[in-house]
Each structure stands twice: as C-alpha cells, then as structure tokens.
Image 1 (cartoon, rainbow, N blue to C red):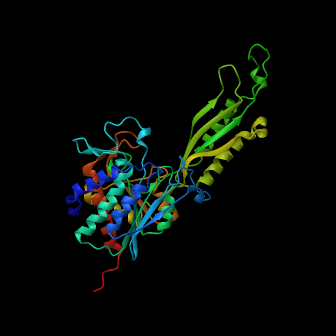
Image 2: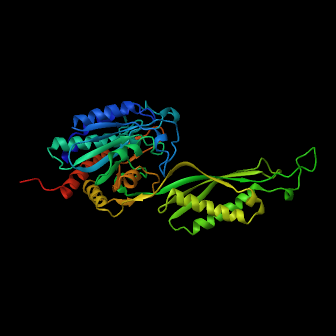
Image 3: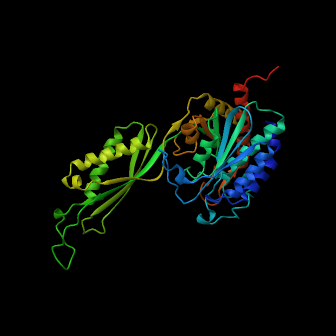
Length: 412
C-alpha cells in the first residue's frame, strides 16, 4: 500500500481541513456535509440519518445522552454486495469547556516532533479522515473491491444514542466492521479492540431518621433513638460486595457515599453511587442482581423493610459484546502485524465502546483499531503522524485482504 504514504501530504491536508470545522456534539451538520462530499467523490451514495434519542428510548440498552442534542449521522454505500463497514464518530468535546490550549484548537499544529495537535485529532477526526484516505488510496491504486464497503459517520460521544446507534442500525448487517479510532491506552495498534465490557452506574438512596433533640438550645440527641442512614448504607455496601464476589464475570465498586451534616447529628439520608462492569449478562440482569443484594440487606433491618432503599440507574450504560477469535478479528490482526511488524494483542477492557453497536444490533463482528494519540478530552489533543499513516494503511489492507479472502473470483 505504497499509495497511502505517497498521499501522506494530501491526507494531512484533509485532516487540517476537518479539524478546522467545528463539530462539537450537537453541532455536526457541517462536518457531515463536508465528509459526505468527500465520499461522493469516491462514488458513494450518502444518506443522512437524522436522529432523536427519544425515538429509541424503548431500546433495552438505551443510554440517556449526557447532554441534550438531536444528534445525527450518515450512511454511505455503493451498489452491489456488501462487504465490510468502516465507521467512526464525528463529534468532539467543546474546547471552551477544556483547559487553555497552547494554540488555536481549530488549527492543526505540528510540534516538530512528529505530532500534530488540534481539536478532535485523537477523538476522533483522525478516524474519519483515515477512512476517507484509505478508500481514496485503494481507488487510486487501481484496485477494485468486489464487495462494496459501507461507511458510517455519526455522533457518539454522549453514549452513542444521538446518532451512532441509529446510523449503524440503518446501515444493517455487514461481514465485518472496522471502528477507526485512535487507541486510548497509548500504544496505538499494539492492541486491537475485539470486545467491550458492559457498564452501568447506579445510585442508592437510603432513608434514616434523625432523633428529636433532647435540648431545645442544642442539637444534642440520643443517636440510639434514631435510624442512622450511614450505618444502614454500610450494611448495604457489604451486601453488594458479597454479591459481586459471587459473580466471576462482574466487577462492582461503590465509589461515593454521602451522608450527614456534621459529627453530631444522625444522618437521615445516605446516597451512594457506584459502577458495575461485566463481560456477561445485560443491563437488566445486572441491575436486578444489584437490587437483589440491596433487598437482602434490607430484609435484616425492620426499619429498611418499611423504608426500602431506592436503586436507580444513572449515566452511560451498555451491554457487553465480543468477536474475539472470529475470522474477521484474525484478518485485522494480520493486517496490523504486516504494517507495524508486531502482532497486536486483543483488548477488551474498554467499556461502552461503539464497537458494540454493529455486534449487538447488526450481527456483525467488529474490531477497533487506531494510531497512537493522547490528551483525549483535554486541551492540546495530539496525534502521532507516522502512526496515523500506518492506521490508514491498515484500514486499506483490511479492506483488500477481506475482499480477496471472501469475494467470489471474478468471472473469466
């Protein structure tokens, strides 16, 4: 794929133009219009996917967006038999909500050490540019894929239900999907995402009762006459830990406990928050298990039997998905090894990755790859240029290798 590196300057110029287009979550229309034009020049038809999270609220694993936005996405396709799908998210964090940038975040800036900085270069404008660059390199090389790829570009940063879920669902089933997103761990294509853990966060509210003060001039009271919400909360935490210890595919951690005003008064409320990560089960089964643990703790307390703690889901949530060991994962692994000289390790620690959408909702094995990058979600977001070009080459090699492996031979 020498064509990829021969077009390196043009690819960086494309990245420069993409960085210059603001695409904060909820404001991606201009970005989608620009990318649609690039894909049309490569012979794709492009369909807009307007989306409203309320339209998919009844989806079992619906994750409420962390900010209000109507979202959106696009699906690009060509006539003929579908092969693979390439996808990436188009939206970025708002640089105004980050720390001060060294340079203008909308200007791609080189640091003289092989890196470029700019809003979204890591998360995930490098991904959308790599897709276009790889498709362009294949076309210019004269290769003709016998199975046409599809491309999905959509909003996803608020949990995936502001565009990515709807767009992947509209794109439908493919033979495999490649998620193009620089790696968050820091070693680029030293690892490839073949799985994503399920995740959910929860809040538990425990009621107590503050005893009546014995003296009118002070808040002095006999704590034994009250119901200490913090003590009850501690018993619930113990029950959750005991339950989690019996679940080998689950990790659960209570990470925040708030109760009481000071050292004197018995707290009448305790609010706890935590997170579960899991590689088996579902949002429904995990929250049911958690509520069962809370109910068992409550059954030992006459007070809690009458004042059952409330357990609610909060924040981003997702179900697990994996294609580890699939033929498609092996093809991606081989492509990375060919380009980088190192066989990548399969990686599955990331939670709520967008790779779950094609696997869970389009029955499509999905792998995530990406170049070395850093400062995700922070100011001075950066991208390693050489590894970015290797990422483009890997995408192109995956497309060609899969086509050669699975497409019927050309008629003779």
